[in-house]
Amino acid sequence: MREQHNQGASSIRNAFALSKAQKRCAILPFITAGYPSLAASERLLQGLADAGADLVEVGFPFSDPISDGPVIAESMHSALVAGVTPDSVFDMVKRAQAKSRDGSVLPLLAMVSISIVNRMGRDAFIARAVDAGFAGFIIPDADPFDAEQLSQQAHNAGAAYCALVAPTTPASRLETVARISTGFIYLLARAGVTGERSDAPEIAERVQALRRITDAPIAAGFGISTAQHIAAVGEHADGAIIGSAIVRTMSRAIEANSDPVAAALALVATYRAE
Image 1 (cartoon, rainbow, N blue to C red):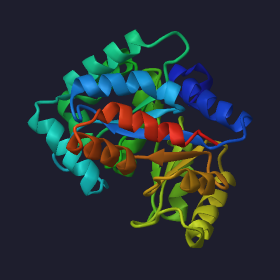
Image 2 (image 1 turned 120 degrees about the horizontal axis):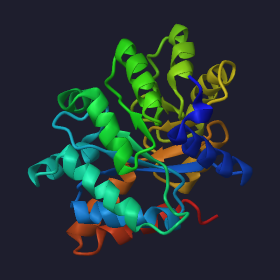
Image 3 (image 1 turned 180 degrees about the vertical axis):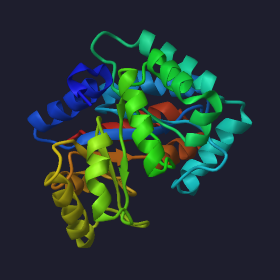
């Protein structure tokens, strides 16, 4: 694949290159589209650039979230109960992109189950997502064969594909993951890891194995919630993905009758405070 002609891949790689030039770890917040409402998600997308995010993962609500913990699963259930659909997510993202100031539009990644993609039709889903403003796709439950096809389909549409590497991913598959990941590689650690120093060797070894075969950016996600976690991740990987901490912060704000969007943006800002 020739990513130099791929606008989505270029925007993602450029975001990582900028954070690297600034000698810091890229910050990738995850949001559940439609939680607590589509209007809130729209405001959140508009504010994340100023808060310090580099890229944003937008999770499409799904009844059986893949690899997500209870916090994110509950937020997806809430969005589905409220009637959020893939079409309404696309419309929300398009509005948010249109309202963003010039230069403040961040690369957006659609994190979505392959069931949703297949239901709409792969080419149709990818085309609609690109039209809405997505730069790339993360499809956690795609099997190896589907992942290769989806990567090519995304590339043909001018978007990137970001494959996952899990603790159970065999070393023999890493080269394929590297080849099909035209955006970045999403590195997962074992459940329960929270960026503690004792777990650093595991992260380092997996990152080093990938570095030997690819120059693709590597973003790690595994329960990251503090600036200290991000600093620890940044010693090895290029980016840190923050999901449950953001959704949990929004949930607590709602319980306290305060603004969940403001709370989430304030949390993200702490990751760039240093």
